[in-house]
Image (tube, rainbow, N blue to C red):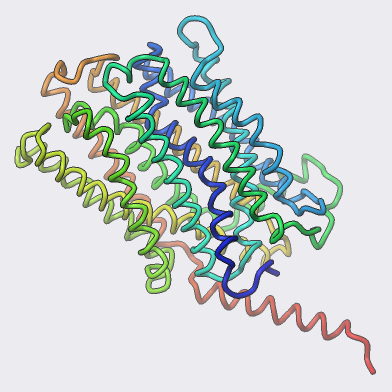
Length: 478
């Protein structure tokens, strides 16, 4: 049974979402700045950086679902999730600061990058998985769950965009500063403080709503039984279909974010001022998402909204690149070109985030489908699977970007005006083709998600009726 029936308190929505600021800080850092920092600043080959992050994800693959399973099994008077949110952010903040000030001499090696990336990813899982797993526990309402995810995504993007704006205006304000390590170190330290305040502050703000002893104590822990439960959950048909679509959508987003500095600098010839204003412009898309996604889910449901968002993002984001490659786009670097590109990207990002938030919200309905089949609830396990998909996609996106950068022959540290036109055109074409394929795959699978709103509400009604029947049968006869 959900913790809260009916409309959710506004304070709970805000404080639940506030914890995602930490995720936004991490996601913005990994997606926008990590590859350029290690490649262009520290001199590590782009292919080595991509391979190191991919290796970290392989190491992560076993740990993430186990973290979710352990979160499901946590049994305290503060509930299953809060203890994780009070403890994990402290070492996470330290690991984040070290990622941007590597404690090694010389150029970081492959395994040194792996060690730093694994530390950040595992500790972030220990914060994000318990936090997001509270959504299906707090409410079983189809649309109210979307409301919680709206606040999570809004807070995550606010965190990421705020750090990006600070990076482009304070820490890395010029193209020259973007090639020096000092600004990245400050970026890491400030981000560490924000992460710490976000996660612990969110836990404190939700404490009086969710701090309660779980209904049932878990059985004794066994590693073999743990992985058996995890594999059983991941075989759930709805989760498999979700995973195919979400993986493609997240990889597409990962490529788009990690290649941003490259395409803005070399394809669209952004000025220093445009670099600084671009994250703020993208923030408009998050406001648009916050307004649109609820009505879309009410009218069309989550699967159609997810698939439609992926296709709309492809068409809108791809249009400037098609026009550029065919010679129909205004001269890049000018005010008209920059303004038009930003307008297209705000609209495309709105559609892309609608797709992502729809996919993420689908996972909540898988929880009840799995419970109906097995009698078990596994919120943490399913959201650990979602989190693993997201992190794999981020690494996959960065890896694809590194392959694109290497493939087109873009050398580290190349000045904006020193790249041959053919290299720039190949960069634009490669990005367009990769994201088109990924968007089509995402739309295909998300549209096939098998749980509709009617299915979910019928399942909840049947569960409530069953609980009432048990209660009535257990009542003493007079």
